[in-house]
Amino acid sequence: MSVVTEVSANGQKLTISVKGRFDFAKHQEFRESYEDKDLAEVVIDLKEATYLDSSALGMLLLLRDHAGGDDADIRVVNSSSDVRKILAISNFDKLFDIS
Image (cartoon, rainbow, N blue to C red):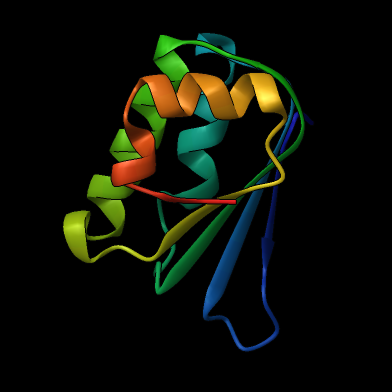
């Protein structure tokens, strides 16, 4: 599986790890990772993501809307410098906490 989901022991934090190319091929798998969950806090771990395209950016926006929009607590962590550059160019650093 290239999208791995982990819920914390207290059920308050959802971690979604993406491996390989984060593109449209992962759309359904990514959506299913959060669709039926209560999203108090979400962490997107991109440590093993090698590439991000515009459909991945759209998927992140859909997740943000699902989690509560402006009030959502979503962090994008462990992104490579290339992925971080794509997120910055797209102004996603204004929508997500990126580290």
